[in-house]
Image (cartoon, rainbow, N blue to C red; front, side):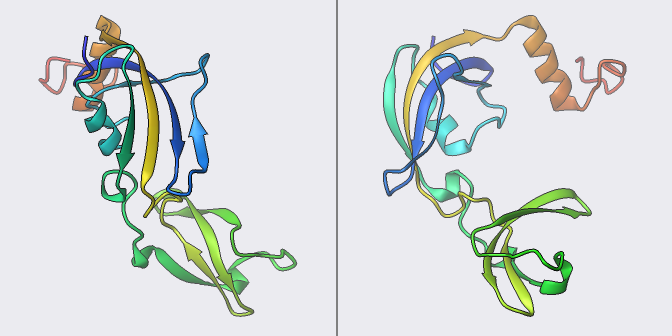
Length: 169
């Protein structure tokens, strides 16, 4: 069976940057599992996996536009230093989480002066070309439960309201 939309995929992988640094990987006892075509993984990787079969291995390179995007200068902002707790030493490279109207957001400190902190709200992998070394460990059809959950998620149903949207969930 081949990787395609609405297939459950089990995958072992390692992820590295152009520098060769491995920044993430699965383990044999904890592979990555996802349902293809549902946006659970980055588009460039998902598209490259389509058509591969169980047991097949490959090296896949994903450009920023098909991963976490390019660095967006609009997401680099100056925050007044007095917005941070006094007495806390803030250094470039530190990560923080802040509350926004849309919920928690993370940022990395790029620069610090007495008056401001330059914060980068881009995804940490924005602008990076990603290199995956993958092995497909399994491809199968969805179980009836997985298919029902996928259908409910796509129409916005909840278990108690399923069917009310007319989507036939």
